[in-house]
Image (cartoon, rainbow, N blue to C red; front, side):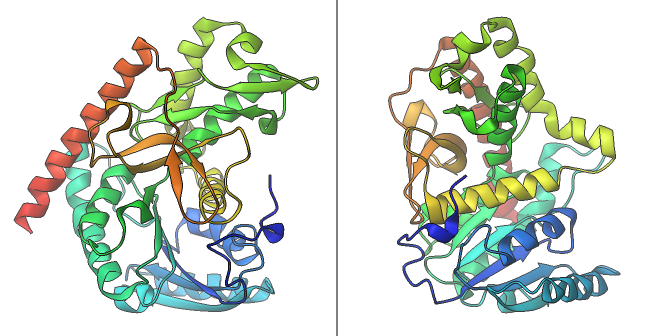
Length: 351
């Protein structure tokens, strides 16, 4: 882990100028775990922050947010300049916003088709996109977390055309962390010793965890993960399945979706993208607008391995060797995203 307090980057050149950070779904589980990280310097280092807590006008939400605001004040975070509660007030939330983390969305319910979920969220993210277009900084950096994250990100971006496309991202860093952790657990090493894993595709069970280019340091020596694990059956089977279905496993175990790990992954994503950059010789996974790399249809929001400079930019890692089996899986995930895009386009055309 690189301490963001020690980093000087383009995004934080104006280190004394506070960042305005919007968190939607702020009254939710992820928000409660994430807000201390945003307020306490874990993400933006010494850069002060104004937090805007955005959520919907459901019973109990406003009172919940008042309690969260009190806790943030009681946390006595030196870099926290203000906390503003926004109940359904998109214009107030996004006015001049520099960063937006969008965890709030319509949750998938039993028996609901993915198209139904897209339909419910298209309105939410369409309205937020229009608010970003109208009120936010032209350089706002956006991370979409609410599912279906990739397609919600696409809908959001289509409603904010004056903001650069590369400023919109979807969270697959949680899947990335899950993949690193499973390899580390298998080998009995620190997660920090595992590098160059990646996630391709959609943030769904079609995602493609990839160990092919991963390396691990054991007793001071670096070797490939494939060599260290020495079990192709595990790497092609249980490893992939565990990462793909980990979210469901957490829900089954605690009757609630991932929150603490999701908040940590959000912090990792933002810190790497906007502050520290990727470590030398490593890459991370982010859902971004495809440019056609690896034959993936341009215009889809798809998870790729990327490197970041820490200034709000990223580059897709090129020329990685992809096996036939992995490419077939990547295409299946692409097909799912193509269908989601068709569904989203159909829904948006009706609005």
